Length: 263
Image (cartoon, rainbow, N blue to C red; front, side):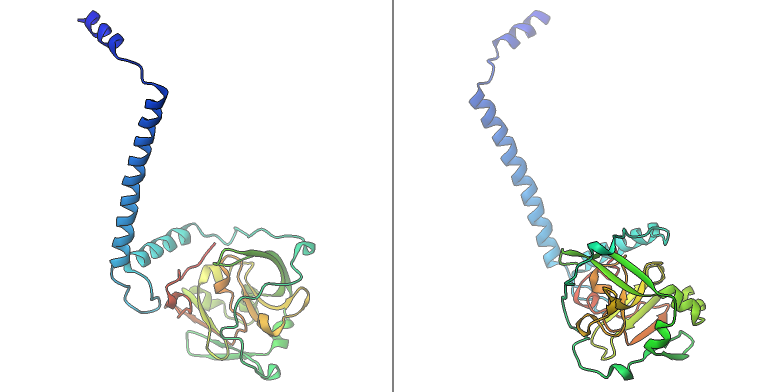
């Protein structure tokens, strides 16, 4: 029996080079077709799935929103304020800082009349001038600003750490809540932030860009710089800050983007 098997093996002709190539091509094209069909089927399923229920987030398919929410939970479990974003020498900072959009910060306003409004969860309302904010210790930050569109740029900002602002003005109890909401004076642009990211030691209430007062188009007189988030969370021209246990509204999350938008 053993000799018969060996004889049969010898009788099998070895494939030619062309046959081997054809065989590999057949396997490759078959695999591609199967995977392509599966991908197309998955796309059709997602495309035809129901839209999420409009609320704090909206504009995307329900399965995709569930996936984004699960991703957020995973990121929040590993998030730590001990993890700092990479910083760079001031010499590496861009002189011509990229400007994307004016949503919520394009209307003219009297800068002398500007006030930062803070709404506590207790209902108490506070107001601060830019001079009060500038009187606190200044922190400078040179980091890579990242946009969801895919570009990044090393930028140099100066201002007050948000956690220093909180501690100085006796807002420590508000950090026990889940979220911070910020919006422009005209309420045209607004973001919602999870508290751990908001009080990250590199999060700034910035009033300087390249060691000069922030230009109008970049959010004069005060804007948010939060390096652990994509640019869509870096609100220009802060008008109001609100503390809450409920997710605040968020401009781009209402358009279907990821609410968390963390890096």
